[in-house]
Image 1 (cartoon, helix red, strand yellow):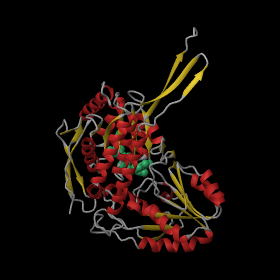
Image 2 (tube, rainbow, N blue to C red):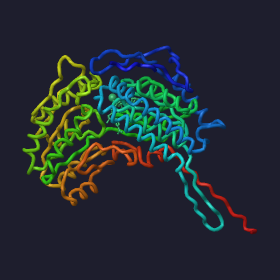
Image 3 (tube, rainbow, N blue to C red):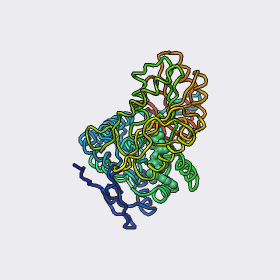
Image 4 (cartoon, rainbow, N blue to C red):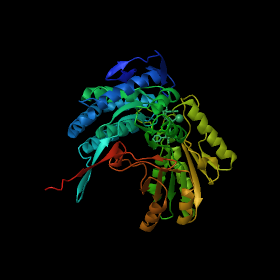
Amino acid sequence: MSPKIKYTKIFIDNQWVDAVSGKSFETFNPYNRNVIANVSEGDKDDIDLAVQAAKCAFRRKSAWRLLNPSQRGDLLNKFADLVQRDLEYLAQLETYNNGMVIKNSRRFVKLAIDYIKYNASLADKMHGNTMPTGASFSYTLKQPVGVCGIILPWNVPLLVFAGKVAGALAAGCTVIVKPAEQAPLTSLALAALLAEAGIPAGVVNIVPGFGDSAGAALTHHPDVAMISFAGSLEVGKLIQQAAGTNNLKRVALELGGKSPLVIMNDADLNIAVPFAALGVFTHQGQICIAASRLYVQSGIYDEFVKRAVEFAKTLTPGDPSDESTQYGPQIDETLMTHILKCIESGKLEGAKLLTGGKRIEGSGFCIEPTVFADVTDDMTIAKEEIFGPVQSILKFETLEEVVDRANASNYGLAAGIFTTSLDNAMQFSTHVEAGIVWVNTYLEFRPDVPFGGFKDSGIGRENGTDGVDVFLEVKTVTMVLSNDF
Ligand code: NAD
Ligand code: MG
């Protein structure tokens, strides 16, 4: 049964409102391409109203930032409890709107609850330092940066919402969230829960709409102090430019990747093969940390490739809402076409297609789990972020060589290694250029460890204590001691 859609309007000052223009846009179920709702289409005028509300909630005397910090934590914990209460509904809604298989949607809602609770626990721990220096005395205060714009991707919207909004709120900021046009529904459902938890009006505002209108208006707005964004590198660059146009905004950017996963000769293949598959086929490859460059050492290469193909063939696509489905659709036709084009380039440039490679006819935007072997570093499928179910296997000889090859990318989000040698693990994790390194595991998320990228994969970190620090300014106060004591 389809989840009931309760919220489709813009959320400003804890009120549900139509767009100023009166416009709305359709949102789809990517599995069967049915229109599931018409959502109010926010634009510059709506962003202006939302920023006004957030600014007022930040500045006024009873402001969010002036609440006792542990009270902010309590309210966030109430929000987490409500997400827990509605876990099944929220998971169904995420699946319905972005095609994530239901088991993963549930896992991500649980993780979102952990993210919120972790940030709640930090609300009263944003301590500064004291610097007594003889004749004067200084201390630092950590204060919220101000009104923040949060721009979300469609691939894991609920989780990214939870991490960013909880971090900003714990810090004392007020926010305007612009969900992705492809999957806005869980953000709207979370807004209702924030209000139910008692988060004051204006602290969180949600304006669904398109990137080049609502998104651009937010990134150009002079009263917005910071933009926290997760999405593509291309849009990340536009955001950084816009952030320097009318005022100087801080930016936190969680961008794409082309993450290398290295399998050494001494790895346990019973673990490495399924993790490598999980790393690239989870959510049909639509994850920023996808293990999309799989480097396998020459001594186990043939055996690994054989097992990787066998594993990929076990993933049967289906309706992501069905309990047994492990593998669903891509988000839309644009992405599907891009992925199929990448697959064609792999074939043309000489990679060996061993399984998959085609659209599954008669379904939504489903593509077969695809494995290429004999991929080389110069091929398009080894360089571009495909954002689809394409495992590209490359051969290597030595650890030193593979570290150089892994680092020869403009991206630097995640990296992984499977090995039973401590030295291999330490050498790799020391020298690889990536914000997140997994050893004998992959795709592990935790609220208490920082998440973000080197190089073109981003600026700033989410989660851990860094996830709150990005929303804070440091203020130094210096007092002179009178010398007539
Ligand atoms: P996208 O960049 O196309 O869109 C992301 C958001 O930006 C959407 O809300 C969109 O409306 C908005 N946007 C588009 N143009 C804009 C503009 N000119 N100004 C302001 N906002 C604008 O990304 P996507 O297709 O939603 O998501 C896929 C990408 O996101 C991949 O590259 C993926 O790797 C990345 N991603 C990264 C992380 C991370 O944490 N590192 C997490 C999820 C997704
Ligand atoms: Mg996109």
